[in-house]
Image 1 (spheres, rainbow, N blue to C red):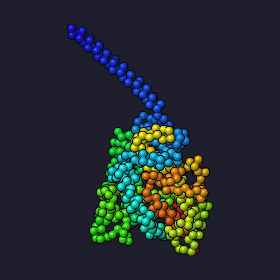
Image 2 (tube, rainbow, N blue to C red):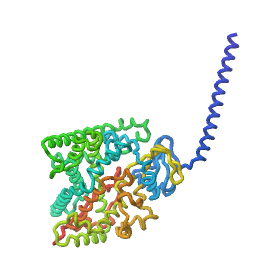
Image 3 (tube, rainbow, N blue to C red):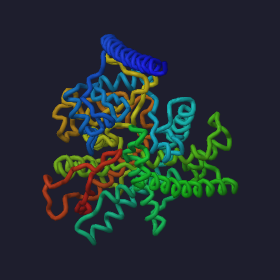
Length: 512
């Protein structure tokens, strides 16, 4: 009886297993039919084939904007990459960018969650990386209406003119003692010192304090542009603990937090002593933000971490190397440099120095800066966006939660939009009223729409004045009789485009 029962039990078990396998088989068939039917109902984006786990990560390369530009030539102005487990929409045309940043700007105004930005920006409490919502809207309102409005930017005119004059004096002193000058260091110091005075109230550029501060900014910028594998393959996030990246980030966060905490406490003490933020020398961003916090002007509680995050945003955006790449292009094109010098010196006339009032009379200078921004977009892929709902775009179905990379660098070199796009030709901007303020989608070096850069006016004021004073006071050339073709324009790696090697120049003071 026991033997019969065992045989019956084995048959039942075998039958159960067979039934289970059959049901699984049917489920797979049904899923296949469902997916096929679903695909027939949806128009899927073109996409290159991918590897398991990593998806298309291997196709990004050291310079993703260039790699994605090449892929767009094969897959079109809209295509999908799978970076690990994350779907990413790559946008490479002005028309597609307009749809993302204007027609459907609200749908694409969110930011994807970034582990690195979360750590470095106090849980993404800054303007650049904060998710779209009421908090971000309040923060942007503070920046646009109170920190970076036209009146406030004009109020920092004295700072810009003083710092650019100091740069000229440094170059003049170096001319007599060296055959070549590291212009990259001088221009980076100019922007850092200007931003320090505007944001913090004073410079941090002397002695050990200066060395430490420069190191902090350099390390911070490098980390912000570091690829974090855990953002795309979450279960591999532990690698950053093994390779020391987590420890490096934690150290930098601690160092910067202590520094900013000291700055804020110093400002609070001065405010207790009766310093008004509108007094001469007192209108820096920290004072303004503390006053907004104290008076509750923002309509919500502005926390200390938010103040620190905003200041870090200012440094991250304000210390780019746009001017360095621009000077490199001028050295490669001496006739354009000569034409620019002629314009600046004619406007200056017998005046000893250039002021911001003179810049309005220099259309070629503005064209030169625009052309440099077109060819060398500071953040070539802008800051990633994310769709907050499903949408149909140019006939394709885009799922909610899809990340978006707008390749502004590729759009600036699109031959259907620009004649001879690889050529440095500033005069092209005499034939058009295209500007970089986010209304012309063939030229979006600072983005557009709700998430466009709010500090464009301030950044351009520094760059225009620095370039004008540089070519007004000096004749520039490559050192040691170098040829224009010798200029190395290779790019470094990171979140922003910058030259891999510093720009060295021979500067001769202009006589008369």
